[in-house]
Structure formats: C-alpha cells, structure tokens
Length: 329
Image 1 (cartoon, rainbow, N blue to C red):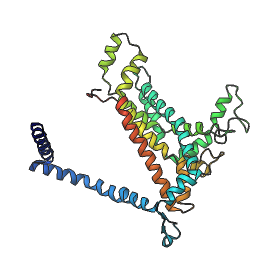
Image 2 (image 1 turned 180 degrees about the horizontal axis):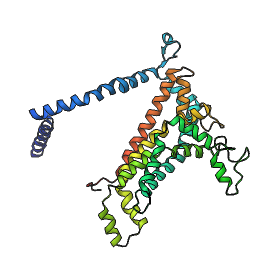
Image 3 (image 1 turned 90 degrees about the horizontal axis):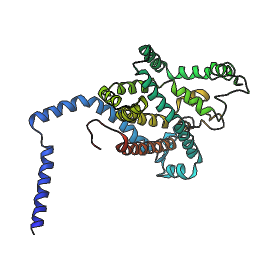
C-alpha cells in the first residue's frame, strides 16, 4: 500500500512538473508572441510552398494522373508504389547508379575540402588570403556555365587536361586517349572533377571551424611532443566534427538529388551505356517528358523516404563520433 501511495505521489508530481513547464508568465507569453510574429513569414512560406505541395504530391502518387489529361485522373491506391517497387527495374538501376557515384564522389569531395581548408589555414602558407579567394571564386560561376567549361576541359582532343597528361608520356590525346565523358570507366571520375570545382563553400565552412579550435590545445600537444599529423588527428579532426557532420549531411542530400550535370552534358539520356541514368533523371523523365505525374510523384516520395532514412541514420551515428564542446561522452 505504501508503494502505491508513493507511486501515486510521484505520478502527481510529474503531472505538476509537466504543467509547470508549459505555464508561462505574462512576460514569457509576450516574448513568445513576438517570436511567432517574426517567424510567421517563414512559417507561412513553409506551409504554402513546401508542406502543401508535399501533401498534394503524395495524393498524386495515389492516382493515375497524366498532365495532359487532368480530367481523366483516377484513383489507383498503392498501384504506383507496387509498380515502382516490384515491376520497374529502372527504379533500382537508377538508384544503383546514384549510390555508386555517391560512394566515389562523396569521400573525395569531403576529404579534399577538409585538407584544402587545413592548407589554407596554415600560417606558413604564402599568399593564403589570395589562395582562399581563388579557391572560393569558382562557386560564383553559374553552374551551367561551369559545366560547359568543364566539357571543353575534358575534351579528349583539345582539352587542356589531356594535353597536360600527354606531357608525362601517356597517350591521352585523341580518340584513342582518355575520353572522360565517353568512357563508362572514367565518367564518374569526370563528374567528380566537375563537383570539385564547386567545393569552395565547403572549404570556407571548414576553414571557419578550423579557426575556432583553441590554440592552447596545439601548444599543449607540442609541449608533449605531438607532431603535426598527431595534432591533426587527435585535436583538429575531433574539434571540427560538427562541421564535418554538417557538410556530410548536405553532401549526401545533394548527391541523392544529382541532376543538373548529366542533364546539361547529355540531355539525361544515360550516356555512356546508362552510367549517367541517375535517379533524379529518371524521375524527371517520368514526371515531365512522359507527363506521368502520378508515377513521378511516387518516385519523388520514394527518394524522400530514402533520404530521410539516411539522414536519421547519420544523426544516430553522430552520437558516437561527433564532438560538441562542453558535452560529455
């Protein structure tokens, strides 16, 4: 009986604490009202331009809906989902292409941005302010223009990349040379080159995080005899893991939505040999050229679920390797 009494008292105290947590004073209510007032433009924009279209697109996925005949739309339930998951091999092929490219491009982009930031943060680097500007400058070039520039750079006959490689004695120039955009074995490397052109933002973010690492930690490590590589691994990397995590999430989401480069270079036809038939290319074809909006919405929601699952996994895994100042592990 005493145990039940104690349990009831604890339960009543928990309810009181919960109510007290949501009980606001007059000043707190005024502050909350002002906060909601300033947030209202974003909340309204999110509801109108993000949340509402998401709901409508999900409803589209339940219909056989063709853009040219909206009056003939008919409810088919989960038929589009069944077709996508069980009968359409193109969905899985496009996913395979997307993830294959991501596994190649993601580590190269992440490591390159971090190491370049470390280099640009070095006090021994001459002209580092100029170099920082030069590394960031390509991000100011419109993406379409940058892609067209790289299509010339990677040209097998006149591109300067093959011309430079030929100086080493390798037969890189000509139709029998390195055909970056035509060879299925080189196409992902070429697309990674194009992606590295725009890592200035990631370099800048990494550079800002590096400058926030306390210098006292490096001084203490130097006194203890730690070399540069040891300091980089034991001090620098752990201290900037929140920024690494941030860049990782953005990079993963961006690669899942990879579309513009293959579409500009070859119109999204999958050349060469289907290696550039990315998932977003397939979604675009179904939704717009084929005007099958119901099936396109299904593909879009499937990618959203995949991206959400990967993001949740990354946030879960971050508990084990992301270090936040003042947090105890």
